[in-house]
Image 1: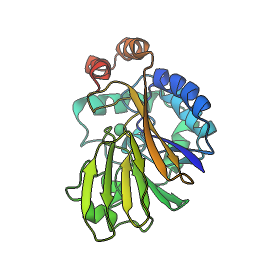
Image 2: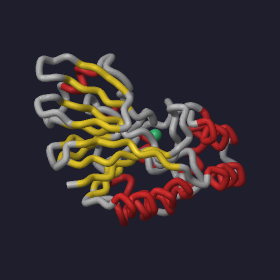
Image 3: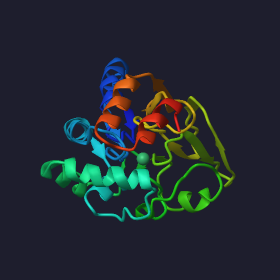
Length: 242
Ligand code: ZN
């Protein structure tokens, strides 16, 4: 089974448009969205609509639930908060219902799928390194977990004797007996210093995980953010990947 895994699209229709071309070329059996479809960007409805129609599995992100007042937006920084209020006004009732209906996590195919963290998924913890990773490994039963949320791709692994390590890799072979947490980066607002959009290809037969990056029409995405009166910083950060 070949899975395409993406998250943190953040209403970036330009990244999504190019993503559709990329995944057609790759080919896949299942498409998994790890949340944060909305927030920050200028096209919330088109993005939610596409995910509704195309993703086989979708879990809720903090921005998705904040947009429908299902999680607290008061802890957001001012840019996130402002764009959240804007997104609430823009989203159609149908798209809001979809976001409201999303589960916090999903298990299928020997994989735990969650937006932020396996431990306390509704507290939206960041899983970015081996520091504190034991509590996350204890919070799911499957060999593999995929997360998003930090917008930075990373691999965290725990060997059979309990040793935990982390690293950044474009390609990773999945060893039996070892458990993994893979962070898929971000499709719509990368923050690892690389402005190229990121997604993951997981092949459960070949036991491989690959991070793919691609360029998209960043200028149009930036222009729309500015034209819609969203904070200009949200446009600028796309060019720097942070
Ligand atoms: Zn996000």
